[in-house]
Amino acid sequence: MRALTYDQAVELGLEPRDYAYEPVIGEFEAVLDFKVWGKSVNLQCYFTVPATGERFRVSAFREDGKHYTPKDGGIDFSEEGLEGGLYRLTIGQNK
Image (cartoon, rainbow, N blue to C red; front, side, top):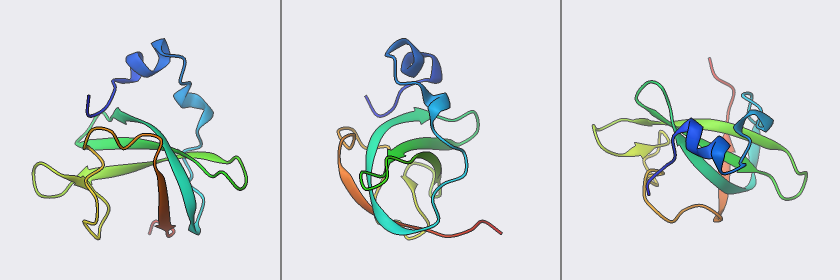
């Protein structure tokens, strides 16, 4: 499965509400815990920073009509099997 619905995540006990909407700003490693389809054309990715235990969510958007990627296009977060992986993230402040 590429991602869960919000209701599926709750039914599985994943507690999306425990993840902050404001992500950690900076460059760091984080584990992708799970993914939830957003209400618009986005995929919410739920991460935990192992070093601090901080939990947050960020959205990946469908830039080219089928791939949900960060702006650099380096990874399609809608691919199956990415959960549990450790990722090096660089997150800046939204304008």
